[in-house]
Image (cartoon, rainbow, N blue to C red; front, side):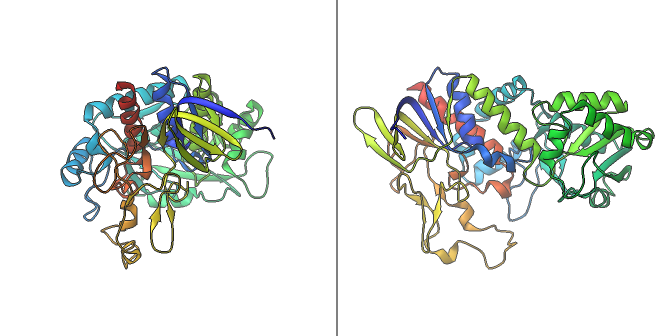
Length: 418
């Protein structure tokens, strides 16, 4: 294999939600962008867009208005990524993001200044801010106590219509379920395979014919998230016309079709905008006095004026846990972390206080540039965004998507102002 050398204005390391958002915001600034990493992490995305639902985590206080929760979080934690972003910046970032997704035929629904109770795979309700249109249809039906039929399939692992019905019995007593065989299949089923099969109109007709008689007495018809992949909206529209009822989805366990649809759409959309996506891993970065940085991917090199580190946490290997400490492997950045490994976790797994390891990460200034223990910027041309940031227990606060999009917007805005 021949050696290859590339040059760019911005190298984005990491292809999760934060990295992809950074690429999008940067394309609007006319920058040349190379993005490295594998977008497969998005297949674990439920499709829910969380900006803030729980704070403080110790008391499990749930916020119906996410902005009030963010204001309280800023007061209590001046180091949280939201403390470096104004409400106006966040609104602008989310607005541009949802507009871009709409152009890619992924339409999100949300209520102004309000969280909504999304339905999870097991039938519990989780407060989130925005969901894809087809998922919102089911939430709306539940909130209005509409009579609905949830279709389940023999052999589909990790999804039980009966369990969802029983768990939602008080919130949605009008929900009924039916379990059928998916047309022309047998054995163990996977959501992605069913979604691909439903891209065919003949399979859509076979499915509708199986449930049509039962469906007539219901206002809404629900399915696991299998209603198509690349042509999801068309599949939904076709099935709705055949049944004569609105349809909705409830996410399955990962790999999740809402996440896969998001990944495929963003990969296509960003490529069309000129982003160079490279599914390789950067294994070494060194400073370059003339250009900025030299990033190495095996024998290949990328000369970058600026780098945005969006490599995620432990699964993405943005952080590495050794026997005694947590490290950031590419730049050896100083991290906020407990002094001792004994303090990484509480004695009780479900401790209301959460685990300190989830607060560990890269500390940044208000422009999302990493800082050292003396709070001085380490490199003027290096930025960090997303879940790798410290003081950011995004899983418990339910703010992961908001932090990813907001911090990407903040970093790109600072680069553009230079």
